[in-house]
Amino acid sequence: MSGPKFPPQANDPFSSVPQNSDPAGTDQAREQPAAKGITRRGFLKGAGVAAAGTALLEGAQVFTREAAAATRGKHDGVKEFGPGAVPVTLHVNGKEHTLQIEPRTTLADALRVHLGMTGTKVVCDRGPCSGCTVLMDDMPVNSCMTLAMDAIGRRVTTIEGLSKNTGNQDELHPVQAAFVKHDAMQCGFCTPGMVMTCSALLKKNPNPTEDDVRQATAGNLCRCGTYPRIFAATLEAAGVSGKESIRNA
Ligand code: FES
Ligand code: FES
Image 1 (cartoon, rainbow, N blue to C red):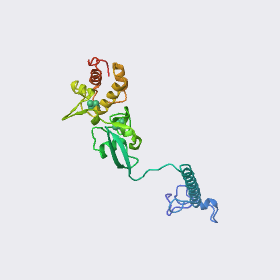
Image 2 (cartoon, rainbow, N blue to C red):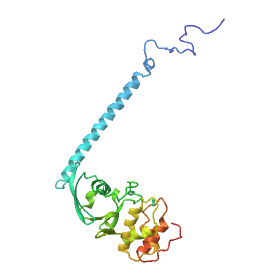
Image 3 (cartoon, rainbow, N blue to C red):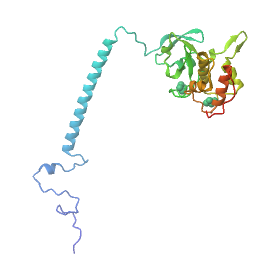
């Protein structure tokens, strides 16, 4: 009766016993898997790659150190700030404010966190929505993308500084008043940025067309879709017809 031989024989093709035809120990024999599946050759190859990687890393570190040394030499005489807090004076809404801030602080954070002017909204905090618009020397800028240090020596105007204080109460800027009249907001998150952009437009172009308003506010995103009322309000503030646009926003 033929059947499986037990224990398995070395010359049995279905046996899991290694068929070592070279008991004296040739290369092939040495390649047989070790207990944990690593061969001696594989181990030596891996060690070689690791050594090469270490050499490359060391080379890169030397290069970085040399580049840093060269840069230091070039910047001699240039004043460096930080990384800790440094005193910075900002001119905001007609007043000077001296703050102690890290050089990496954005203008939005300097206004909101350090000066408590939370009228400026940070919506996306990465550039595309312009909800954080303030004016720097009458130019609209995204304050979340501007370093506070870059505003040194510039006139910064925020939504808080747009109205005029006339004795006991603030008199709204014409754009603010027109936004209220036309109900040109829903959630209101985009509104301070919109108002700043539209007020900058009217300062530069007191008689804008609707296309001018559309172009000026093209970078200001309103997720609530209040655009027709925003255009109408801005045109009314300019003294142009404030009829609500029925064109697609
Ligand atoms: S919050 Fe600054 S661009 Fe959106
Ligand atoms: S009113 Fe809500 S985003 Fe413009």
